[in-house]
Image (tube, rainbow, N blue to C red; front, side, top):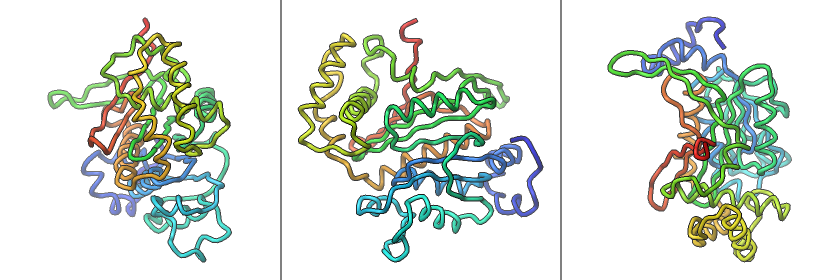
Length: 313
């Protein structure tokens, strides 16, 4: 990503942000290629933000067709049925994103090997594990992110592998390095050594992932009728991890399985945080999030959690 210098047109268009993070960081952004899968409300907000920031290209993948839930939180889909009839969500969002910044190449594709960043939105447990593993096996470093939003709650996961970056300390630039676990490693950490102050959403999301995998459900294909099964899975996971069932509140699990429609204000916040992290990851400017972020609109709090095997070492 350290190719050509910025053009005069790019320098003029991105003048304000160059003043914030510098020309080198903006140059890395304009040469970066982002792959995004699963375009619902939070991911739509993310895409809008990185297109405005001036990445080189954004490639979308989402073969689903528009439904009422899509229209609820995804502002990239026009309300006029004639505008989206017969098109996939990716195709419609591609058309809308091009209007935000003509200098960013936005397209629809189904492969991710040639990208610098891969973002998986609303993916299954198996998909997140498999794609992260493929990214780690590629010859070049590919930053991997997942995002999931249910009701007014959201989760972001980040894997930057062995990542070097700079940050300011007492007016001096300091070179830093972080080692990130894979998604498989991060969700396989035994619960007992994890501090009790850790966000309950971390544990609740793991329960929901196992439920959807066991039942063969897609993201959001659940209702209050599924609560007994979800609670039984919670009980088994807590027993297997030797922790109390209070680790995962029943009320939180109920919210996650009944709140299948995204809350647009939460989408804007989580999508904004995700875009900020991708920009940091690409530019190498600022300390990145390691490795989970949680937001719950009920209390308005955003929490970063570092979940790794360090708890067991």
